[in-house]
Image (cartoon, rainbow, N blue to C red):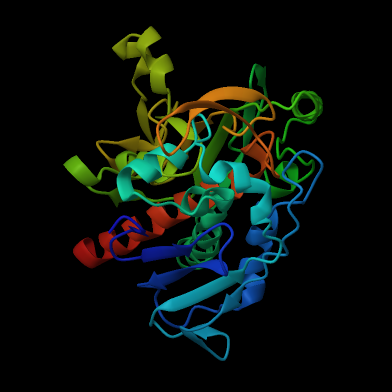
Length: 359
């Protein structure tokens, strides 16, 4: 179904931006994993609105409640249901959008598909839907750390033309969280913040790139042909709101190299197969090779801008619309925990699939 993701570790998200709340059901989580709301809340705090001057000012605590699937602080192996109430919905700010479609938003396409739409805040197409993903991803990250010693991390690599210099092998969470744009390059981060603030004052928006890394994944995770590890990562990332591109390893830059330059030479070191470079991005033939997995996700500028633009209404008449309401001038700072969550969901699902088939 369209609202579910994963095979053995499966999630189903639900809820709309201005409804009673949003949440997720996680099915397939192994039993006896220590888990309380305190394990999930930190990632939701990183995703929530109102956390800094460069994100939407909507005030939500995004406090999670676990409704099922745990007992005395441990998972039961049964479905885990989690709920976050909406506390600061203001549907009146979207009244003009009840009949007019925002350019490049999902307003028109949802209406074309269903013939009805929850117009306050974009309804199901709002990034608020990702609360369920991040909550489920927090469980997946805990499983990866506890069972496999795998670390998942993401950070802002680029905002428009400002590019950070980051060593993905050494970067730590504290480096990412050291500033409000979540870029571990301090000099680039300050330039990014100034750009986002400038664009916001102009009533406009800006996009960029989030880089994701996975350290410690063993060789062997992933499936050949259709469920290749990088294919599932691509699907996961391109399912995120505002995402427009995905590349892993050398990505599109690999076309500039010859095969000899691009190949990752292999050696044995301390009883382990390693590669002396990693242009494959840690995945070959759809299966992890034991090296660091790294990839990039491109996010477009937010569609809602505070300028009048041409559009059409539900009667398919030409009109204009000026954006209103509370919106992010740049999705990247809040997209970082979303990318981490979707990465962890893909990895834990493939870890369980690998164990089920190969032991």
